[in-house]
Length: 604
Image (cartoon, rainbow, N blue to C red; front, side, top):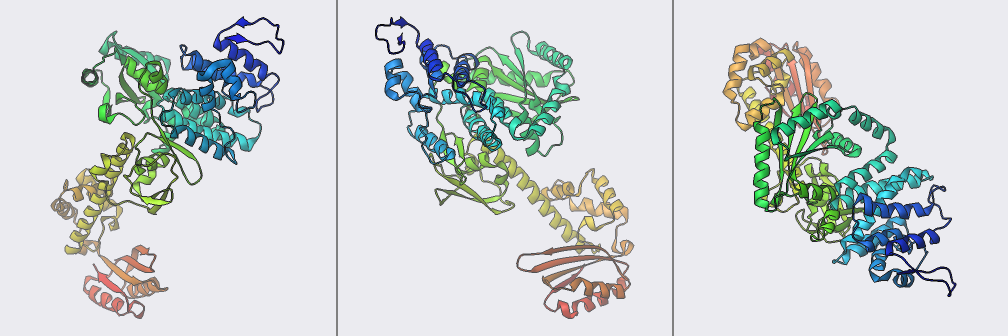
């Protein structure tokens, strides 16, 4: 390869490497050009993109890829054409540069980005180096977001960086190290005050105190010996913020991956032997007598069919300590590298390429998922909270079933039908979706099951109270001190737990009867009456009821009402002080009220 000097045909040709040639022509082509901040030489971006390939991604045996990193913007910036690149650098480098060039393919930047990825991913036999080159390019762009002078552009670019590249492409490629750094760079621009708040919480967290970290490393070394390398990974700011938001936590002490200890062992090539060995290591930690509580409900075995959608493969558990929760990850050396670097690891080790597909939402935003992803997988990626509701999925404006595979570049729209899902997802659905989606659906099923058991328990208790003429239809209608004593009798902290246990059969109604008897909770001693009214909503119903109740010497102590969309209503009034012998007369007078002529009245 030779470097041309100007147009002088008599100039001597000096042999240089492919990468040195790329450096030289880029320096010449971008001479005097500046980046968006109006200060930084445009050449610096080309240099940093190439440095990301060689030093950050540690790919230093592919001069074609490094040269393409230097040249990745020259077509899009109009500095050269395809023929020039082929003449100077050959077809291999040119192919990579052409693949990462967008050519202003649409009317807007969003259109260009969409059309670019659509064309790229529809090729099928995509060279994985193209996406790695794109990540090297964008990683540096994410580091300079704050320097963009135009406020609107800065925020738009940061939002695109977070969702399309961090949570999208980097996550789909399994590049977790870069994923977290891109998300943090974008988060710092999008919400600087919250970024600083979470950053300082992490920075001052006792789990990252140098003395405590040293104790933990010694703790693990004493259990696993010198064959285990201990590596502490500090949680990304955006990642910790997002976990706290999703779990509705006010602090971060319950988030284990604030301080994630990776216990890295020697490679074991046979997968079955590796899984067996790591299971033994998990057991060894559990059997240790060092006074640390292990939350076994947080054991996650990401292997074989349970490997995560992005290829993440490890065993994890959580230690609950005085300082907070700590995530423990069991890996072998090669698996750890693959977990952190994904497609970069695959490229360096000659493994099969990672296939990904792209979807769009109605706002033309781009989402990345593994091939074969179902509608539910898109919903999980789009907004996991929606999985707990009833929704409809449309692909290219046609309704599709939630377990139907989506095709590349489809426009997918999710709309809520009902706020709350009441039926659990069947097992055949769980077996079809990605691992992350399946975990989320299983959690949704647990919540639905718990709510259904609560409802069943509530109905059982309601029927029991009516049959036994206690004067109320819900334990929460009792005076607070009596309710607290009932809960204490069962050793339960909330009424919802009691209803759940009765609904599941863990507690019996006979136990409730015994508790009420011991406490002397009877209609005679309470002096309570409950009146339930069903019918069409009308103004003045409660006023009319109050007048009759007052006439019989009663006081209303609680009112519960529900008005529905069809204008029907349910009204419950709990009354104290009506003589038991006057209840029937009270009921009859209420039943004959003209305003309730179309309603049903029940005395309890």
